[in-house]
Image (cartoon, rainbow, N blue to C red):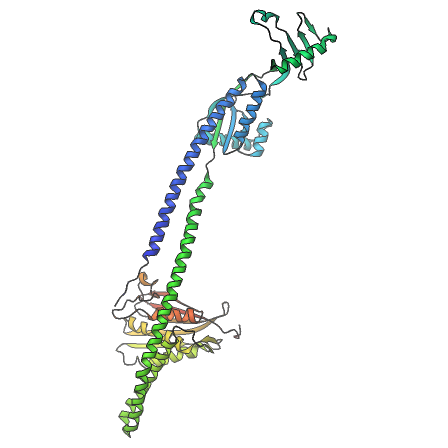
Length: 485
Protein backbone atom coordinates (compact mmCIF):
# COMPACT_ATOMS: atom_id res chain seq x y z
CA UNK A 1 0.00 0.00 0.00
CA UNK A 2 1.28 3.47 -0.87
CA UNK A 3 -0.19 6.61 0.63
CA UNK A 4 0.68 9.82 -1.14
CA UNK A 5 0.71 12.90 1.01
CA UNK A 6 0.92 16.53 -0.04
CA UNK A 7 0.54 19.94 1.55
CA UNK A 8 -2.15 21.84 -0.37
CA UNK A 9 -2.64 24.20 2.57
CA UNK A 10 0.95 25.41 2.26
CA UNK A 11 0.53 26.00 -1.47
CA UNK A 12 -2.74 27.80 -0.80
CA UNK A 13 -1.00 30.11 1.67
CA UNK A 14 1.96 30.78 -0.65
CA UNK A 15 -0.22 31.54 -3.69
CA UNK A 16 -2.68 33.57 -1.62
CA UNK A 17 0.04 35.69 -0.01
CA UNK A 18 1.72 36.22 -3.40
CA UNK A 19 -1.55 37.45 -4.93
CA UNK A 20 -2.13 39.64 -1.89
CA UNK A 21 1.36 41.16 -2.24
CA UNK A 22 0.81 41.82 -5.97
CA UNK A 23 -2.53 43.49 -5.17
CA UNK A 24 -0.93 45.65 -2.46
CA UNK A 25 1.89 46.68 -4.83
CA UNK A 26 -0.54 47.53 -7.63
CA UNK A 27 -2.72 49.64 -5.34
CA UNK A 28 0.33 51.37 -3.82
CA UNK A 29 1.71 52.12 -7.28
CA UNK A 30 -1.59 53.76 -8.24
CA UNK A 31 -1.51 55.91 -5.10
CA UNK A 32 2.14 56.91 -5.65
CA UNK A 33 1.51 57.90 -9.26
CA UNK A 34 -1.50 59.96 -8.21
CA UNK A 35 0.56 61.73 -5.53
CA UNK A 36 3.32 62.39 -8.06
CA UNK A 37 0.86 63.90 -10.55
CA UNK A 38 -0.58 66.13 -7.84
CA UNK A 39 2.94 67.11 -6.75
CA UNK A 40 3.92 68.05 -10.31
CA UNK A 41 0.76 70.10 -10.76
CA UNK A 42 1.51 71.94 -7.52
CA UNK A 43 5.12 72.48 -8.63
CA UNK A 44 4.03 74.01 -11.94
CA UNK A 45 1.62 76.31 -10.11
CA UNK A 46 4.39 77.41 -7.74
CA UNK A 47 6.74 78.09 -10.64
CA UNK A 48 4.11 80.19 -12.42
CA UNK A 49 3.49 82.11 -9.19
CA UNK A 50 7.23 82.59 -8.64
CA UNK A 51 7.56 83.95 -12.18
CA UNK A 52 4.73 86.41 -11.57
CA UNK A 53 5.98 87.71 -8.21
CA UNK A 54 8.53 90.18 -9.66
CA UNK A 55 5.76 92.04 -11.41
CA UNK A 56 3.82 92.78 -8.19
CA UNK A 57 4.17 96.44 -7.29
CA UNK A 58 3.39 96.04 -3.61
CA UNK A 59 6.73 95.08 -2.11
CA UNK A 60 5.31 93.79 1.15
CA UNK A 61 2.84 91.56 -0.64
CA UNK A 62 5.58 90.39 -2.99
CA UNK A 63 7.95 89.53 -0.13
CA UNK A 64 5.22 87.72 1.78
CA UNK A 65 4.27 85.67 -1.26
CA UNK A 66 7.94 84.96 -2.00
CA UNK A 67 8.49 83.58 1.51
CA UNK A 68 5.45 81.33 1.15
CA UNK A 69 6.53 80.05 -2.26
CA UNK A 70 10.12 79.43 -1.12
CA UNK A 71 8.92 77.59 1.96
CA UNK A 72 6.69 75.33 -0.11
CA UNK A 73 9.51 74.67 -2.57
CA UNK A 74 11.96 73.84 0.22
CA UNK A 75 9.60 71.40 1.91
CA UNK A 76 8.26 68.17 0.56
CA UNK A 77 9.84 66.17 -2.20
CA UNK A 78 10.77 68.93 -4.63
CA UNK A 79 14.36 69.29 -5.81
CA UNK A 80 15.11 72.15 -8.18
CA UNK A 81 17.84 74.29 -9.74
CA UNK A 82 17.26 77.70 -11.34
CA UNK A 83 19.75 78.56 -14.08
CA UNK A 84 20.31 81.76 -16.07
CA UNK A 85 18.86 81.58 -19.58
CA UNK A 86 21.89 83.10 -21.33
CA UNK A 87 24.88 81.94 -19.25
CA UNK A 88 23.50 78.65 -17.91
CA UNK A 89 24.94 79.55 -14.50
CA UNK A 90 23.05 78.04 -11.53
CA UNK A 91 21.40 80.80 -9.49
CA UNK A 92 19.67 78.89 -6.71
CA UNK A 93 19.29 75.21 -5.82
CA UNK A 94 17.29 73.25 -3.25
CA UNK A 95 17.07 69.59 -2.35
CA UNK A 96 20.32 68.40 -3.98
CA UNK A 97 23.26 68.89 -1.59
CA UNK A 98 23.57 71.34 1.31
CA UNK A 99 27.16 72.38 0.50
CA UNK A 100 26.40 72.90 -3.20
CA UNK A 101 23.23 74.82 -2.34
CA UNK A 102 25.20 77.16 -0.05
CA UNK A 103 27.91 77.83 -2.66
CA UNK A 104 25.37 78.47 -5.43
CA UNK A 105 23.34 80.84 -3.24
CA UNK A 106 26.46 82.80 -2.17
CA UNK A 107 27.83 82.81 -5.73
CA UNK A 108 31.02 81.06 -4.62
CA UNK A 109 33.23 79.44 -7.28
CA UNK A 110 32.59 75.75 -7.85
CA UNK A 111 35.29 73.16 -8.42
CA UNK A 112 35.40 71.08 -11.59
CA UNK A 113 33.95 68.12 -9.73
CA UNK A 114 31.15 70.24 -8.25
CA UNK A 115 30.28 71.72 -11.62
CA UNK A 116 30.07 68.18 -13.00
CA UNK A 117 27.73 67.17 -10.19
CA UNK A 118 25.48 70.18 -10.81
CA UNK A 119 25.42 69.34 -14.52
CA UNK A 120 24.42 65.75 -13.77
CA UNK A 121 21.69 66.97 -11.42
CA UNK A 122 20.30 69.24 -14.15
CA UNK A 123 20.47 66.50 -16.80
CA UNK A 124 18.67 64.08 -14.51
CA UNK A 125 15.95 66.64 -13.76
CA UNK A 126 15.50 67.44 -17.45
CA UNK A 127 15.10 63.75 -18.23
CA UNK A 128 12.31 63.52 -15.67
CA UNK A 129 10.52 66.80 -16.45
CA UNK A 130 10.65 69.52 -19.06
CA UNK A 131 12.48 72.65 -17.91
CA UNK A 132 10.25 75.67 -17.41
CA UNK A 133 11.12 79.28 -18.45
CA UNK A 134 11.02 81.54 -15.40
CA UNK A 135 11.76 85.13 -14.37
CA UNK A 136 13.94 85.65 -11.34
CA UNK A 137 15.56 88.55 -9.49
CA UNK A 138 18.89 88.52 -7.70
CA UNK A 139 18.40 91.60 -5.53
CA UNK A 140 15.59 92.31 -3.10
CA UNK A 141 13.37 95.32 -3.63
CA UNK A 142 14.29 98.42 -1.60
CA UNK A 143 11.69 100.67 0.04
CA UNK A 144 12.87 104.25 0.04
CA UNK A 145 9.74 105.87 1.55
CA UNK A 146 5.98 106.34 1.53
CA UNK A 147 3.62 108.90 -0.01
CA UNK A 148 0.50 109.76 1.99
CA UNK A 149 -2.27 111.62 0.19
CA UNK A 150 -5.52 113.37 1.02
CA UNK A 151 -9.05 112.91 -0.25
CA UNK A 152 -10.18 115.31 -3.01
CA UNK A 153 -12.70 115.24 -5.80
CA UNK A 154 -11.74 114.25 -9.33
CA UNK A 155 -12.06 117.82 -10.54
CA UNK A 156 -9.46 118.97 -8.00
CA UNK A 157 -6.95 116.12 -8.53
CA UNK A 158 -4.24 118.56 -9.60
CA UNK A 159 -4.46 120.07 -6.10
CA UNK A 160 -4.05 116.63 -4.41
CA UNK A 161 -2.40 117.14 -1.00
CA UNK A 162 0.38 114.68 -0.16
CA UNK A 163 3.28 114.12 2.23
CA UNK A 164 6.38 112.15 1.19
CA UNK A 165 8.19 110.47 4.15
CA UNK A 166 11.19 108.25 4.64
CA UNK A 167 10.88 104.59 5.78
CA UNK A 168 10.45 105.78 9.40
CA UNK A 169 7.50 108.07 8.47
CA UNK A 170 9.55 111.26 8.96
CA UNK A 171 8.13 113.94 6.55
CA UNK A 172 10.65 114.95 3.85
CA UNK A 173 8.53 117.19 1.62
CA UNK A 174 4.83 117.91 1.10
CA UNK A 175 2.13 119.84 -0.61
CA UNK A 176 -0.77 120.25 1.75
CA UNK A 177 -1.84 123.89 1.78
CA UNK A 178 -1.16 124.82 -1.84
CA UNK A 179 2.62 125.34 -1.91
CA UNK A 180 5.34 122.69 -2.26
CA UNK A 181 7.64 122.73 0.78
CA UNK A 182 10.47 120.67 2.25
CA UNK A 183 11.33 119.90 5.84
CA UNK A 184 14.39 122.16 5.61
CA UNK A 185 12.35 125.10 4.30
CA UNK A 186 9.46 124.88 6.76
CA UNK A 187 10.50 123.05 9.92
CA UNK A 188 7.62 124.70 11.78
CA UNK A 189 5.09 122.77 9.64
CA UNK A 190 6.57 119.32 10.29
CA UNK A 191 4.14 118.54 13.12
CA UNK A 192 1.18 119.47 10.92
CA UNK A 193 2.61 117.19 8.19
CA UNK A 194 2.89 114.35 10.74
CA UNK A 195 -0.75 114.90 11.72
CA UNK A 196 -1.64 114.62 8.03
CA UNK A 197 0.32 111.34 7.83
CA UNK A 198 -1.54 109.93 10.83
CA UNK A 199 -4.87 110.82 9.30
CA UNK A 200 -3.91 109.29 5.93
CA UNK A 201 -2.77 106.11 7.66
CA UNK A 202 -6.08 105.89 9.48
CA UNK A 203 -7.93 106.12 6.16
CA UNK A 204 -5.40 103.86 4.35
CA UNK A 205 -4.35 106.50 1.83
CA UNK A 206 -0.69 105.60 1.23
CA UNK A 207 1.62 104.41 -1.56
CA UNK A 208 4.96 102.61 -1.10
CA UNK A 209 7.87 104.24 -2.90
CA UNK A 210 10.41 101.48 -3.77
CA UNK A 211 13.21 100.55 -6.11
CA UNK A 212 12.47 97.28 -8.00
CA UNK A 213 15.29 95.32 -9.70
CA UNK A 214 14.79 94.23 -13.26
CA UNK A 215 13.70 90.58 -13.60
CA UNK A 216 16.04 88.24 -15.47
CA UNK A 217 15.25 85.26 -17.66
CA UNK A 218 16.10 81.74 -16.54
CA UNK A 219 15.02 78.10 -16.48
CA UNK A 220 13.49 76.08 -13.67
CA UNK A 221 14.81 72.51 -13.57
CA UNK A 222 13.05 70.26 -11.09
CA UNK A 223 12.38 66.72 -9.94
CA UNK A 224 9.72 65.41 -7.57
CA UNK A 225 11.11 62.57 -5.50
CA UNK A 226 9.11 59.35 -5.49
CA UNK A 227 7.31 58.13 -2.39
CA UNK A 228 9.58 55.09 -2.16
CA UNK A 229 8.78 54.46 1.49
CA UNK A 230 5.19 53.75 0.48
CA UNK A 231 6.42 50.73 -1.44
CA UNK A 232 7.61 49.23 1.86
CA UNK A 233 4.05 49.13 3.15
CA UNK A 234 2.87 46.18 0.98
CA UNK A 235 5.86 44.12 2.11
CA UNK A 236 5.29 45.10 5.74
CA UNK A 237 1.59 44.31 5.50
CA UNK A 238 2.28 40.98 3.80
CA UNK A 239 4.93 40.15 6.40
CA UNK A 240 2.51 40.88 9.24
CA UNK A 241 -0.22 38.80 7.60
CA UNK A 242 2.30 36.02 6.95
CA UNK A 243 3.42 36.11 10.59
CA UNK A 244 -0.19 36.01 11.77
CA UNK A 245 -1.10 33.13 9.44
CA UNK A 246 2.19 31.37 10.22
CA UNK A 247 1.49 31.55 13.94
CA UNK A 248 -2.01 30.19 13.35
CA UNK A 249 -0.66 27.46 11.08
CA UNK A 250 1.98 26.54 13.68
CA UNK A 251 -0.63 26.35 16.42
CA UNK A 252 -2.84 24.23 14.17
CA UNK A 253 0.05 21.88 13.35
CA UNK A 254 1.01 21.68 17.01
CA UNK A 255 -2.54 20.83 18.05
CA UNK A 256 -2.71 18.20 15.31
CA UNK A 257 0.59 16.71 16.46
CA UNK A 258 -0.63 16.61 20.06
CA UNK A 259 -3.87 15.00 18.89
CA UNK A 260 -1.92 12.56 16.69
CA UNK A 261 0.44 11.75 19.55
CA UNK A 262 -2.54 11.05 21.81
CA UNK A 263 -4.06 8.74 19.17
CA UNK A 264 -0.75 6.95 18.64
CA UNK A 265 -0.20 6.62 22.36
CA UNK A 266 -3.68 5.26 22.96
CA UNK A 267 -3.41 2.85 20.04
CA UNK A 268 0.00 1.64 21.18
CA UNK A 269 -1.13 1.06 24.76
CA UNK A 270 -4.27 -0.72 23.63
CA UNK A 271 -2.17 -2.91 21.30
CA UNK A 272 0.19 -3.75 24.17
CA UNK A 273 -2.79 -4.57 26.38
CA UNK A 274 -4.40 -6.78 23.74
CA UNK A 275 -1.11 -8.63 23.08
CA UNK A 276 -0.51 -9.24 26.77
CA UNK A 277 -3.27 -11.86 27.20
CA UNK A 278 -2.36 -14.20 24.30
CA UNK A 279 1.35 -13.92 25.15
CA UNK A 280 0.69 -14.98 28.73
CA UNK A 281 -1.38 -17.87 27.44
CA UNK A 282 1.35 -18.93 25.01
CA UNK A 283 3.92 -18.86 27.80
CA UNK A 284 1.70 -21.21 29.80
CA UNK A 285 1.39 -23.60 26.84
CA UNK A 286 5.17 -23.57 26.34
CA UNK A 287 5.73 -24.52 29.99
CA UNK A 288 3.22 -27.33 29.62
CA UNK A 289 4.95 -28.60 26.51
CA UNK A 290 8.34 -28.53 28.25
CA UNK A 291 7.00 -30.95 30.83
CA UNK A 292 5.77 -33.38 28.13
CA UNK A 293 8.71 -33.23 25.75
CA UNK A 294 10.91 -35.45 27.79
CA UNK A 295 14.21 -36.36 26.16
CA UNK A 296 13.29 -35.63 22.56
CA UNK A 297 16.05 -33.28 21.39
CA UNK A 298 14.24 -32.20 18.20
CA UNK A 299 11.25 -30.98 20.19
CA UNK A 300 13.51 -29.28 22.74
CA UNK A 301 15.11 -27.25 19.93
CA UNK A 302 11.70 -26.23 18.65
CA UNK A 303 10.62 -25.20 22.15
CA UNK A 304 13.80 -23.16 22.52
CA UNK A 305 12.98 -21.27 19.33
CA UNK A 306 9.40 -20.74 20.51
CA UNK A 307 10.68 -19.31 23.79
CA UNK A 308 12.96 -16.95 21.86
CA UNK A 309 10.05 -15.72 19.77
CA UNK A 310 7.88 -15.30 22.86
CA UNK A 311 10.63 -13.23 24.43
CA UNK A 312 10.68 -11.17 21.27
CA UNK A 313 6.92 -10.69 21.48
CA UNK A 314 7.28 -9.47 25.06
CA UNK A 315 9.85 -6.91 23.91
CA UNK A 316 7.53 -5.70 21.12
CA UNK A 317 4.71 -5.40 23.62
CA UNK A 318 7.00 -3.44 25.94
CA UNK A 319 7.88 -1.08 23.07
CA UNK A 320 4.25 -0.33 22.36
CA UNK A 321 3.71 0.23 26.06
CA UNK A 322 6.44 2.89 26.06
CA UNK A 323 4.81 4.88 23.21
CA UNK A 324 2.52 7.62 24.44
CA UNK A 325 4.18 8.07 27.82
CA UNK A 326 7.51 9.35 29.04
CA UNK A 327 9.87 6.37 28.77
CA UNK A 328 12.30 5.50 31.51
CA UNK A 329 15.85 6.37 30.46
CA UNK A 330 19.16 5.25 31.88
CA UNK A 331 22.80 6.15 31.11
CA UNK A 332 24.05 3.55 28.65
CA UNK A 333 26.88 3.06 26.19
CA UNK A 334 25.19 3.54 22.86
CA UNK A 335 27.49 1.01 21.16
CA UNK A 336 26.15 -1.75 23.42
CA UNK A 337 22.53 -0.86 22.66
CA UNK A 338 23.16 -0.74 18.89
CA UNK A 339 25.14 -4.00 18.93
CA UNK A 340 22.33 -5.82 20.73
CA UNK A 341 19.81 -4.75 18.07
CA UNK A 342 22.23 -5.77 15.27
CA UNK A 343 22.91 -9.14 16.89
CA UNK A 344 19.20 -9.95 16.93
CA UNK A 345 18.75 -9.15 13.24
CA UNK A 346 22.01 -10.80 12.12
CA UNK A 347 20.70 -14.12 13.35
CA UNK A 348 17.54 -13.74 11.28
CA UNK A 349 18.93 -12.62 7.91
CA UNK A 350 21.15 -15.67 7.35
CA UNK A 351 18.34 -17.47 5.56
CA UNK A 352 17.82 -14.77 2.91
CA UNK A 353 18.68 -15.54 -0.68
CA UNK A 354 20.88 -12.47 -1.03
CA UNK A 355 24.13 -12.29 0.85
CA UNK A 356 23.77 -9.52 3.44
CA UNK A 357 26.65 -8.29 5.57
CA UNK A 358 26.38 -5.97 8.59
CA UNK A 359 29.62 -4.13 9.37
CA UNK A 360 29.93 -2.56 12.84
CA UNK A 361 32.47 0.11 13.75
CA UNK A 362 32.18 1.37 17.32
CA UNK A 363 34.41 4.13 18.62
CA UNK A 364 35.81 3.22 22.03
CA UNK A 365 35.34 5.31 25.17
CA UNK A 366 32.19 7.08 24.02
CA UNK A 367 30.46 9.08 26.77
CA UNK A 368 27.23 7.53 28.09
CA UNK A 369 23.83 8.59 26.77
CA UNK A 370 20.52 8.75 28.61
CA UNK A 371 18.40 6.32 26.56
CA UNK A 372 15.61 3.82 26.71
CA UNK A 373 17.16 0.58 25.41
CA UNK A 374 13.91 -0.84 24.07
CA UNK A 375 13.03 2.25 22.00
CA UNK A 376 16.51 2.92 20.60
CA UNK A 377 16.77 -0.74 19.58
CA UNK A 378 13.46 -0.32 17.80
CA UNK A 379 14.93 2.60 15.80
CA UNK A 380 17.93 0.53 14.68
CA UNK A 381 15.71 -2.41 13.76
CA UNK A 382 13.42 -0.16 11.71
CA UNK A 383 16.41 1.11 9.73
CA UNK A 384 17.68 -2.43 9.15
CA UNK A 385 14.21 -3.56 8.09
CA UNK A 386 14.00 -0.74 5.52
CA UNK A 387 17.45 -1.64 4.18
CA UNK A 388 16.48 -5.29 3.73
CA UNK A 389 13.48 -4.21 1.67
CA UNK A 390 15.61 -1.80 -0.42
CA UNK A 391 18.44 -4.17 -1.44
CA UNK A 392 18.57 -4.75 -5.20
CA UNK A 393 22.13 -6.08 -5.41
CA UNK A 394 23.46 -9.60 -4.94
CA UNK A 395 25.52 -8.47 -1.96
CA UNK A 396 23.86 -6.15 0.49
CA UNK A 397 26.04 -4.18 2.89
CA UNK A 398 24.92 -2.36 6.03
CA UNK A 399 27.47 -0.24 7.87
CA UNK A 400 26.88 1.10 11.37
CA UNK A 401 29.43 3.29 13.13
CA UNK A 402 29.43 5.43 16.24
CA UNK A 403 31.34 8.61 16.93
CA UNK A 404 31.44 11.60 19.28
CA UNK A 405 31.06 15.29 18.41
CA UNK A 406 32.80 17.19 21.26
CA UNK A 407 31.78 20.60 19.94
CA UNK A 408 28.08 19.80 20.27
CA UNK A 409 28.57 17.18 23.01
CA UNK A 410 26.60 14.64 20.99
CA UNK A 411 27.03 10.92 20.37
CA UNK A 412 26.59 10.15 16.67
CA UNK A 413 25.28 6.97 15.02
CA UNK A 414 25.76 6.76 11.25
CA UNK A 415 23.79 4.12 9.43
CA UNK A 416 24.50 3.33 5.74
CA UNK A 417 23.43 0.71 3.21
CA UNK A 418 24.07 0.08 -0.48
CA UNK A 419 20.42 -0.33 -1.44
CA UNK A 420 18.63 1.33 -4.34
CA UNK A 421 18.17 4.58 -2.45
CA UNK A 422 15.22 6.89 -1.98
CA UNK A 423 13.98 8.92 -4.99
CA UNK A 424 14.71 12.62 -4.65
CA UNK A 425 11.02 13.52 -4.88
CA UNK A 426 10.30 11.36 -1.81
CA UNK A 427 13.24 12.29 0.41
CA UNK A 428 11.45 15.18 2.11
CA UNK A 429 8.43 13.00 2.97
CA UNK A 430 9.95 9.81 4.33
CA UNK A 431 9.37 10.85 7.96
CA UNK A 432 5.70 11.73 7.41
CA UNK A 433 3.28 9.26 9.04
CA UNK A 434 1.58 7.13 6.41
CA UNK A 435 4.11 7.73 3.63
CA UNK A 436 5.58 4.54 2.15
CA UNK A 437 6.96 3.38 -1.19
CA UNK A 438 6.27 -0.26 -0.44
CA UNK A 439 3.32 -2.18 -1.86
CA UNK A 440 2.54 -3.47 1.60
CA UNK A 441 3.24 -1.24 4.56
CA UNK A 442 1.74 1.39 6.83
CA UNK A 443 4.51 3.96 6.52
CA UNK A 444 4.99 4.29 10.26
CA UNK A 445 8.51 2.89 10.80
CA UNK A 446 10.57 6.03 10.07
CA UNK A 447 7.90 8.32 11.55
CA UNK A 448 7.98 6.36 14.81
CA UNK A 449 11.80 6.30 14.76
CA UNK A 450 11.98 10.07 14.34
CA UNK A 451 9.57 10.58 17.19
CA UNK A 452 11.52 8.22 19.45
CA UNK A 453 14.83 9.98 18.74
CA UNK A 454 13.65 13.59 18.74
CA UNK A 455 10.72 13.74 21.17
CA UNK A 456 11.71 11.07 23.68
CA UNK A 457 15.51 11.49 23.55
CA UNK A 458 15.94 15.17 22.50
CA UNK A 459 18.13 14.08 19.59
CA UNK A 460 17.94 14.29 15.80
CA UNK A 461 17.31 11.68 13.11
CA UNK A 462 18.09 12.93 9.61
CA UNK A 463 18.70 11.63 6.11
CA UNK A 464 22.22 12.65 5.09
CA UNK A 465 22.22 11.39 1.51
CA UNK A 466 20.52 8.88 -0.74
CA UNK A 467 21.05 7.69 -4.29
CA UNK A 468 21.59 4.61 -6.45
CA UNK A 469 24.76 3.82 -4.49
CA UNK A 470 22.89 3.71 -1.17
CA UNK A 471 21.41 5.66 1.72
CA UNK A 472 22.92 7.18 4.86
CA UNK A 473 21.03 8.18 8.02
CA UNK A 474 22.47 9.96 11.05
CA UNK A 475 21.25 9.81 14.62
CA UNK A 476 22.55 12.39 17.12
CA UNK A 477 21.90 11.99 20.83
CA UNK A 478 23.02 14.41 23.58
CA UNK A 479 25.74 12.96 25.78
CA UNK A 480 25.00 12.54 29.45
CA UNK A 481 25.89 15.58 31.62
CA UNK A 482 28.47 13.62 33.55
CA UNK A 483 30.33 12.70 30.32
CA UNK A 484 33.80 14.03 29.96
CA UNK A 485 34.21 16.59 27.18
